[in-house]
Image: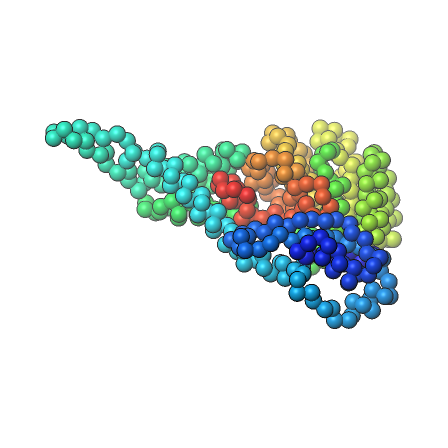
Length: 398
């Protein structure tokens, strides 16, 4: 099956574009409206992106080799990406500028130089001495600290970031320098993001985590990304045989993507399936949701992971961003007793506080990977962006 995305100014034009390239048998799988973003949004019109699919055949292959005529009234996918790049390049700076204005405004109401004056011999009021540069730095950092705490950053890690910045600041640093230093420090703390599908990556990707966090849907999104965007030859495997719905859900996605699905009931069956999957680039493995409190279930998961040698596997712990911090600490600590992992956070659309992304990364040392923000397959997933996370933690808008 051939699956491609097409972008145009209207839904009708996008479908026409899909029919032109894939043929009249093409099926529309998903329709998404894209609103312009960035500094040029006032000068651009909204676009529509569709995901279309068609069975691979000789007619399509022959047509694919012919030069395609471009409709000047249609915004093509690669053109849309290029046009959005320039707008996105200054987005962070603009948001930080707004945050700087907010901090300066708040400081104007909090610093000592705004205090009421005192009477002089002539009966006129004499203003209090202006705040020193050191006072200004402390007030600014206090406001930033408050923003981080409001976004549910652990006090321990908020203080750590503040202290590291404070030791290196000049007396006359100013709001702009303090803000940029904090922003850069948080980006560095978030670390290198771990992505899937690169050269030298593992073949077997296990997705583990508690029940109800969205592992199966996340796997479907990543499978779509790997096949459609990276052109990988992929397969699915599920050991989540406790929930019939999970197998049925993956079966549906496997049929849409035209990829094989293997159901395994034991570590031994994983080893048998490996032989049948030796020609595939990547195999995504769904696992049953496990309670971190149940020792027997943790032992079962460990045996399943050990059915694949460590050098051939990667493990992703899938967590919900809506889970309470205390529970996240217990979950991540218990899974670290089984295996190392990278972190995927789901349901970011259901919370306004994202401090736990920084908290859990700093607590476990596990690299951040992907975030999901809705149920729509394959769109509602992206690589975690440290710059965007840092901006939100400092109080900027999304």
